[in-house]
Amino acid sequence: METVFFSFKNHLLILLLFSVLLLILTIHPLEAESEDAAIISRFQQYLQINTAQPTPQYQQSADFLISQAKSIGLEFRSIEFAQNKPLVLLKWPGSDPTLP
Image (cartoon, rainbow, N blue to C red):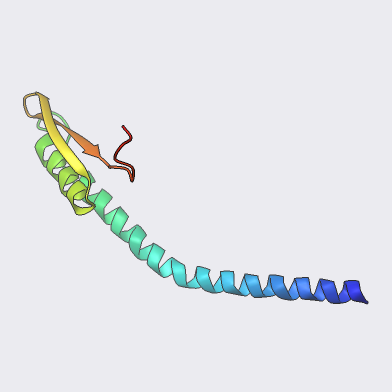
């Protein structure tokens, strides 16, 4: 009899945990879908920048990357080793500034 009660308690606990998980998963996708849409939109904006030869718009793509870096607080630097061909370096500082 004791094992039956123990099994019932386990099933009840599992059912409760499953219900909470189901509730979380039904609420979270709305936020995730919105975030996914924003990510896809930014990627589409980047893809609209012409970087194909013979007249690539490298500076426009670099400016886009820099604007995205600024929006999330990344440090950035734009370097040109060749004229009109910028290289964008992004830096994401860690939580411990003493580390390299």
